[in-house]
Image 1 (cartoon, one colour):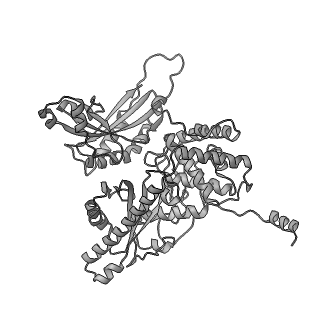
Image 2: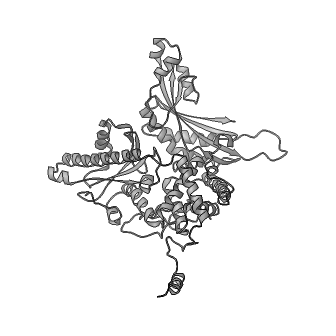
Image 3: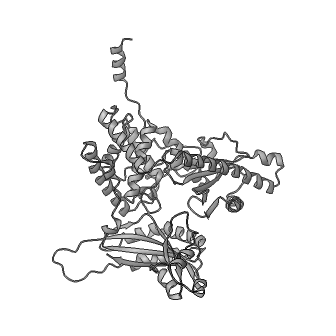
Length: 534
């Protein structure tokens, strides 16, 4: 066949379809777009988004140790259950990574989402007792906490300084060999819903990678979007924005629509398409599939709860679920506004009139509103504080939803991060003050994740002349501050009198909700809410 004939045949062939629709364009990148992608990569490097070879190697070592530990855990439980030694050793156990690490877009210091897959005789309770105790004995493990009653039960820890979120999934098999793959839907049979949710983290990540046409362009674009979302304070599933997997699926969908585009063009199209997207039209990477289970698959025609999702982004692995059920009316409005702002900026960058660094400008959250709510969760030990502040954070979305019904309140904007502090109190009064959001001069310290147990006593002794008696009487109080920006309807021109925003009902309901926690220690844990006017 001659070359012109080949070209003609290629032109007649419809372009390969990567998602639920045909591509919008299969155009190859221009020289200018490739140059802009190089600039983008350099900007990402300048922002320290790529870890060193040494850190990458450390992660591999940590994962190797964890994998070995999982096998020891399975062996230990097998022996407890009376299995002979040979069968206990053969029972196996394996870890899988998912999330940003598995997608290849993690940055320096990022956590590793890890799934420990075990055979059927190892129960979830064993994971939260036997495995937890094994981890507690390891000198490399710090800040170990478990959230057994979470939507996806998890153990959180730092292993050799690397943050790890560890899930557990017991499969209905008698052994878990090293070559086990989770893509087979049959592994979902005869396991409970929490196990399916745990397995789906890994299954979804692998499916996303399978469904994007160009993995390099996808990774660079996703790193860009993640950095932008974090800088603009809209990266947080728990607070009602989007989490890592939802951002990954959005980027993957744009990659499907422009299969030959380079990263700079993907980023440009991402913002242009998403600020005009007709929500609640769902974002899908492939058609929703049926499978072997009697489990609920996302279907707004069947389920009223699914119909209420405001920004549905649907996971591609069976059983399909909405990854964005936490999005509220306020958080959706904020995200769409940010898509528009970014679209305007990137349009300028693509024309050579702007720089990528402009896209990553920090949000002005603490200047954007006149009114704020400050929520203060407090306790008397770092271990208790990790659990208590985690519980309060997980319920904040309920407060946002109730605030959205308050008259004159247009928007409730949650700050995506809690601010952790430790206070060294000399008097009872100081203890009462800090639990309400006060700070002590030279005796209150902001603490970063991974350093909750840091002791500041020597620092205090050096700076302040305290007697031995005062030093011995110091009581430490740990607090976590959460903030919500409140956008109040502007006063109509010419209207007189004062207006009062009535926040009593939503705040009281929220306090009641968190105080109902079954692990609340009333003597040592407190929760307070106050309004702040700028």
